[in-house]
Length: 196
Image 1 (cartoon, rainbow, N blue to C red):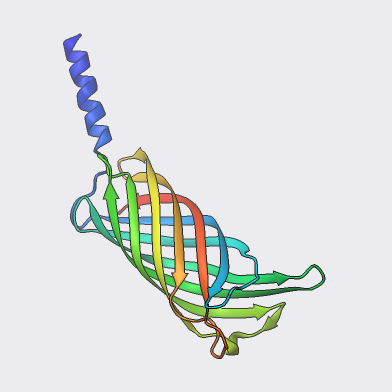
Image 2 (spheres, rainbow, N blue to C red):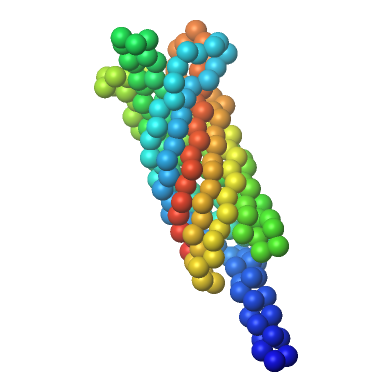
């Protein structure tokens, strides 16, 4: 009986720590999620958020079991809408975004993570009620990201994750405007984590 208990403890401890990464490990994580975005600025804006789908892929390069550098490529839709009950005005801006974040893995099995850092967005299209306004919008967006997530281990080399990511734009949206208006973006995501 003692041997069975000892074997059970050994297997449990091995599985519990099997996904702790070490220096030079790489993880690739495709994801999909639901996102909301809105504008914020110097003046009080009487507008509402828009919803969209967030798709992309993250890659983590590990420096040790607790820290990794996270980057990736995302297709993100941002913007805002205004409605007075009779008229609705919606602006939709689409970006290809590249984050460059520090990612801290915590908890005894390092399944929790907290990432933070800048993101670089490149405008691909901009519309207002279906009219192209790309020439009136800045082509580059600098953002500040923060996110938290949890990995559910399936095997030694594969996990499923759920996370929340938020971004506040640091640069203005419009090339010319009387008020400073910036993007605010948040998403809830699910995806797979593959150890390469």
